[in-house]
Image (cartoon, rainbow, N blue to C red; front, side, top):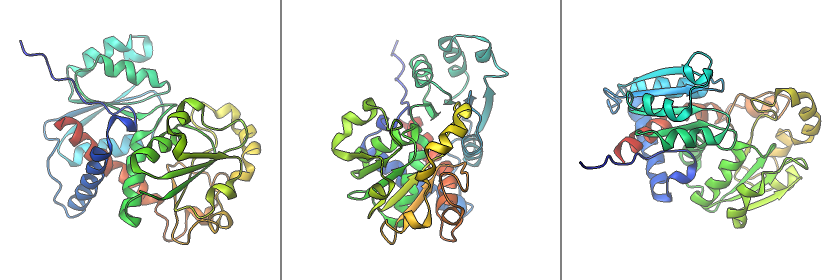
Length: 305
């Protein structure tokens, strides 16, 4: 009996190489154009995606569910609140069962080990829709957005302002894959952990000074100061991060054609001022839409490999 081919998973950005990442981004741009022209191919015809949510979601659920439907497939929504996973079923057991009935699985959860364990026992591709450690699907959308508006990120400077969180960790991986420098500005004690920085030291510069990070940057990125699971720290974090708001004044230190990005949801007057987020040429809304196109290209890639 010929052993089944091991599936390709996408748990972090490092699950693809530079060539594969570029191919996914270019395919995302192609699929976006086809979809807008009403010519979306039925790439996922007869395919089913299981979407498992331990963390609440807006963009992740809509982008995956809509993307699969537009390409001819179907998506099943599973919340841990109303499935056996929420009642203590071992992840290994759930992985074996769910993977036997669907073609792909997307998981949005807290611990990164959850998606790792699920993938270990899954015979179909598993996609990380977000964990406390990484958010690789968002980076696909961010890279696509930058490429569409400014071209390659190679040789560019990206400024990260705010918390050294899962998005920050994933941007660090992207710096290596896309050949850019990342300057990270966080309050003291909120820097990304060494485990995420050390392998990419030559790409990363860390300080506690937003102005230093943003100076002459090509792209400025931020995120909410309190992520899901940190609601109890919200008021305290707002005080600590008060000097880390991305404003027009801070953006003026970046290059004249610098882009601003935010994975959303955004809190105007907190991590970003309203006039930065709502400027007429803001790419944040296209960045959000690109989650769907980038993920469509990713799903096509994973099924083909």
